[in-house]
Amino acid sequence: MISVQNIAGGYHQKNILNNICFSVQEGEFFGILGPNGSGKTTLMKMLSGILPVTKGQIMIKNKNVTAYSSKELAKVMAVLPQLTQTAFDMTVKEAVSIGRYPHQARILPRWTVEDEELVELAMKDTGVAGFAGRSIQSLSGGEQQRVFLAQALAQDPDILLLDEPTNHLDLAFQQSLLSRLKSWTKKRNLTIVSIFHDLNMASLYCDRVMLLSEGAISDIGTPYEALQEPTLKKVYSAEVKRHYHPSHQSPQVILDSPGSPERQVRITEEWLSIHPEYIALKSPIPLKTLSSAVVHAGIGWYTTFLNRHVDLNYSTDHAQVDLIRFIQSKGFDPNETAGMMTAVQLEDVSVKMTELAGFSILTVVTAGTGNAADASSGMDRLSASQGTINTWVFVNGICSEEAFIQAVITATEAKTRALADRFIQDPVTKTLATGTTTDSVLIAATQQGQELPYGGPATELGRAIGKSVYDCTIDSVGRYLEKKRHA
Ligand SMILES: Nc1ncnc2c1ncn2[C@@H]1O[C@H](COP(=O)(O)OP(=O)(O)OP(=O)(O)O)[C@@H](O)[C@H]1O
Image (tube, rainbow, N blue to C red; front, side, top):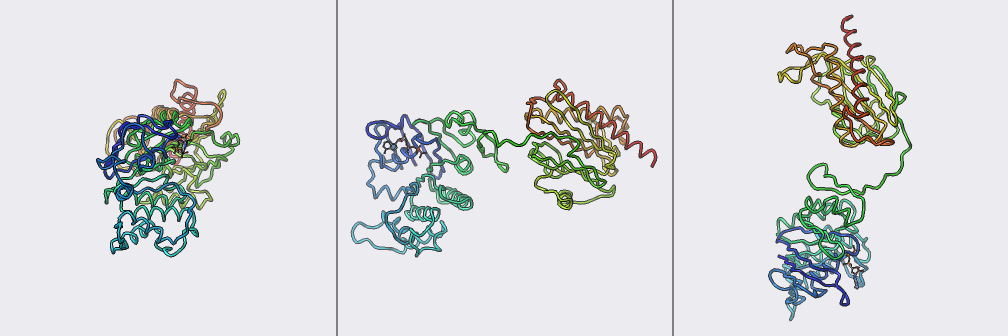
C-alpha cells in the first residue's frame, strides 16, 4: 500500500531524514516512534506529499505520491494532524462534511445520499453525533480531536495518517478510539500509519512499529521485536525497563527512575501479630513478594501478609472469595494482602529473626504433617487431614529476581530436610515425606539496604534462609507432634 524507497529530505536544503526505507501493507496498523526532533512529523509530511523528498521516492498504491493531484490524493489518504487552534468556527457536522470535499464533482458539486450517510457514520463512530449542531470552538480539546478524526473518516480513505491521535483524549477515549481504529484495519482493510509518543499504546495496538532516531531508522518490526530494552535506552537516552502486559504478550515500557524514597524499614517480630484465628504481618511499606498464597499468588507488592486458621472440616469451592471476605472482616485491604490458610493451631507458630552483616531475615513457619507426602513417589492421593506447612521469609535487603527464586528453592530444601530429620513419613508410601500436599511459601523483601543478588546455599542469604527455615520447621513440627501425642 505504501512503499518508502530510500528517501531523504528536510527543510531549507538540509536533510532531516536519511536512508529511510520501509513499506506498509494494506490493512496494517503501523506506528512511528522516536524521541522529540527525530523526524516523525517530517516523515508524515513527506508521506502526505506536503514536503518533497530530495532523494528516493514514496509510492502510494503503486503510484509516486508526487504524481497525485491533491484532490486525488485526498480520496486515497486522510491526514489527521496534531490538534491546533481552529481558525474558523463552524458546526461539528459542517466540519465533518468537509471530509467529503475530495469526492465532490469539480463542476456542479452535489451533496449525495452517500455523502450524508458517510458523514453520519463517521460522527457516530467517533462519538460526536450527539453534538452535531454545536460549534467546534465550544468543544473541549478531546472532543475537537474526535471531530477531526470524524472528518478524516468521512473522507473514506484507504490510508489514514495520524499524528498522536490520542493526545488530548482521556483514558477511556484513548482505548475506544484505538480499538475502533484497530477494528477498521481488520474489517475495512484500512491502512493506518500513526505517530505515537506513548510506546505502550503503540505496543498494544500496532502490528509493527518503526523507531526513528536522529532522522534514521533505528529499528523496525513487531512491538516485541522492535521495542527492546537496549535499543530504547539508546534511542531515548533514558533508563527504561521492558515488561509484559499482565494479560498478553505486548511488551510494555516503564521508566526505571529511582522511586520516591520510602522511609527506611526493618521487618522484625514487632510487625507480627498472632491470634487464634490468624497470623498477620503488617508492613509500613509495600514489600516485593513472591508466593504461592491463596490470595495474590505470584509476584507483586503487598503490605499485609495473613495466614488464616480454618477448621479441620473447612471445605469450600470458593477459597479465594472466602479468604478475601475474611481479610476484609479483620480490617485489612484485600488488594494489599497476600493471604494463605492452614488448619494447624497458630499458637504453634515458630518465629526466628536472623541478623547478618548488612541485612537480616525474619522467618515464620506454621507446620502440620497430617497431609505429609513424598513428592518423588508420584502417588495419587486424597488430602483430607490437618497439615500444611506455610513458610514465610521476610528479607531486609534488596533481592534480585534470581534471589527470590533461589530463596524459594533453598527454603523448600531446608523444609524437606527438617521433615526427614523428624522422620515424617508419607502415610501412603511409608517413605520419608518431602512436604505436605498443600504447602505454601512466601518470600518478601523490603528492597532497601544491601543488594542480595543470590539466595542459594553458597550465599549468606541462602545460608540464613536454609538454617532458619530448617530450625522453624523442626520447632513447629515438634509442637504439632507433641499436641497429637497428647490428643
Ligand atoms: N519547518 C521547519 N523548518 C526547519 N526545521 C524544521 C522544521 N520543522 C521541523 N524542523 C526540524 O526537523 C527536525 C525534526 O522535526 P520533526 O518535527 O519531524 O520531529 P518529531 O520527531 O516529529 O518531533 P516531536 O516528537 O517533537 O513532534 C527537528 O530538528 C526540527 O527542529
